[in-house]
Amino acid sequence: MIEKIISLNKKMKGDFKDKLKSLYKKFKLDVISIQNLNSKRWDIVTRGLVEINEMDLVEALPQVRELTNASNFYIRSQSIATLLNLSEKVDLSTIKKQSYPLSRWQQMNYLRIIKYLHIQKSLKIDTLFYGENQTIRLFGYKLVRMLGRVELVGQLAELAPNVDDVEKIEILKTYQIIGIHTEATFVNQCLRSENPDLVVAAAKASGVIGDQVSAHILIELLNEQPNFQLKMLFLENLMKLDQSMYQDYISKSNDLELNQIHAHLVDPLLQHV
Image 1 (cartoon, helix red, strand yellow):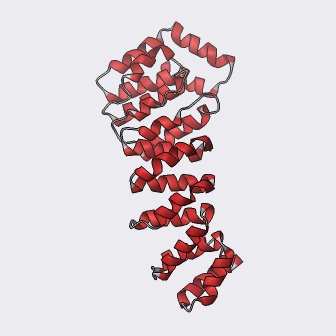
Image 2 (cartoon, one colour; image 1 turned 90 degrees about the horizontal axis):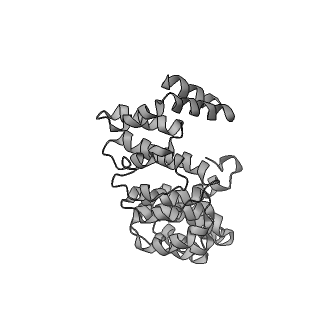
């Protein structure tokens, strides 16, 4: 009966859903769902969480909260999803306090819920910037750009110089996608990094939010004779950033490879290749 009611609930809308939930409680099926949380089997606990989530059993939230840092991946994932869905005020501190890393699947699942909820409820995304493990902090930076939370860029700017390179790369992606031109200095610092992955991320960002200093650094990097992929990256973003400096650099270059890249970049048929 539980499976049939939940299956029907997924297909219905409006008043009919409310009647189904009333029926669920009238038959005391809610008691069974909540009792499942005490099972020693992870699959039964997870099933109970799904049922609580589907039937909006908010009275079970205290017990659900106790499972959010469970050692079992499925219990942990479903309990956080249930908490996000049913809490009157969405408290992301539950995710912040996670001692386990967030998998890509979990991030996608929570993002789907948060994208829906952030329109209806206030979300303190910046809470995640101070998470107990790096995957949570990275998830917070991603949310800024995915939800367009430009007002949080100031906080990112304060954190950015002091985080490690993996986090700097994620912050650069956020600056690039949102178009934060005030952070060109940070981009330039990253362009001079000894970490090639960070330099690549900074080069991509420089074409969107860089300044004159960025253009000069890109030329310096090109003069160091990097490999073909890096040459193309630096040249492409120099072209985006400053057409006059780009044209001047190309006109003075005797590098055959650079000229081949230039021909590729200016060919309208190859712009997206």
